[in-house]
Image 1 (cartoon, rainbow, N blue to C red):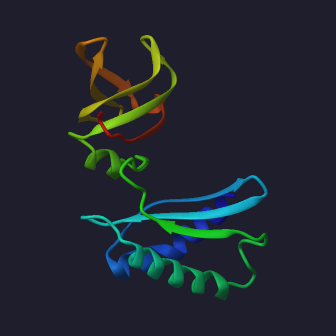
Image 2 (image 1 turned 180 degrees about the vertical axis):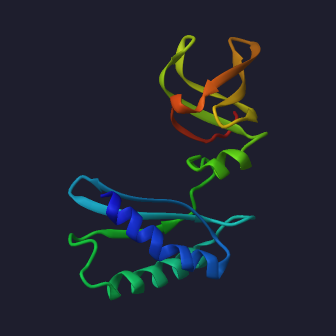
Length: 157
């Protein structure tokens, strides 16, 4: 699986550079009986459907030209925006999110929970500081980066 992700990442990077888009994520997953190759792209101000279609067409051409085919099974190619709740995976994603409201899922509990939402206040190589509302009290939690299972931007309600 990871070889597919690596191959597609290598193929799509020049397309991203040409159009000045950001590659957010590439995933190759099986859902039910179908395989999906998903490429999430963005740019400052957001990405539109025509731009997604352009990347899809250009990437599809590159994939079709490869011999041997790096993806032997049938799959659906989806190129889209990561949405308002975009994942935070790369160090740059976290750096851009300082000051933003985020959702963090942890491998192990810190305090009473494995899930927190709050404003990302500070970021170091080892940890992040998150301002959270715990039962009406505002606290700052320091979360080790190695303990983060998943993180994404979140919408505050």
